[in-house]
Length: 380
Image 1 (cartoon, rainbow, N blue to C red):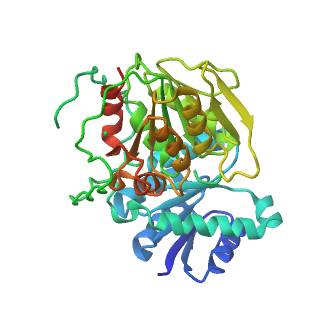
Image 2: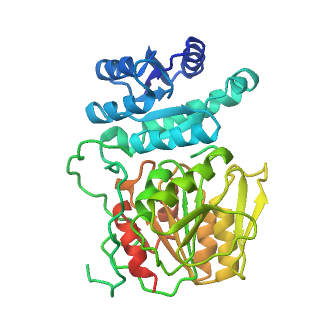
């Protein structure tokens, strides 16, 4: 099946290069281009592309505003191009919150110097997000962030939780929830209460907004330390941690070597590096290994948690491409720890959670909107 793409950028050079790169893939068709946000909306309505690539800074209407309008009028997966700066990170996070699915660095030097690598990455991203749940309206994005409401107090469980890296939109149509895999716990199963020493959450594409939705449900006195592993460039993680810290009642910061794990604090793995935890409750930040696809890598952090905390870890795998986290989850499972996976219906990309479920590692499969509440219930 050919993926139809609309390319939006005010730079004629960039529009041409992106169009040329995409058109070299016989399974991708560039159906149109636009030079500003207003043209992008009109073209999206008339051409009905499968994917839109979008710049931020454009005349007449910027990319974020265009994304919001597109999500309201003709929801379509959007891939943002971003500069690798702190301001570029802030803008990209705003775009993801507005409805964009994923992003790529906008680097003219890379296009000239590494055309084959850029071509492979861009085409892979386009193909992946064309298959995302948002294309079919089965994912319900978050509303614009507001002050979090009080989280429920812990109660007894009820009877009834490097390269890849949400918008306000009409409510999705009612769809039947996918049947849980026979080997996985149903989403209606109450979480087991336990005195966990660590909550570890791994994610990739769709993760920034997913993490925001989970963490804003936690109270300031959440009883367990949290580590977060999000596939994200080095220039982005500090801005992302700052954003989460402003929105959440728990504290969130980009992890530094020697940081101490403590209740009510979430430490975000820095982009381009690896994060490990030790049995003394300290964090180790190591250089990114070029042999590893992901920097940070969920498997690395999960594996260190399995070694240091045995059966006292609650690991959660959220939306994302690929299978990062599966082998680390296997080690955690062997040690007696608990593994949760996000369900398919609420994922942007059902890759990483699917890998957990298919490997029969999930103790529970929960919708994104239920995960924060169940974390409060599960952690004593």
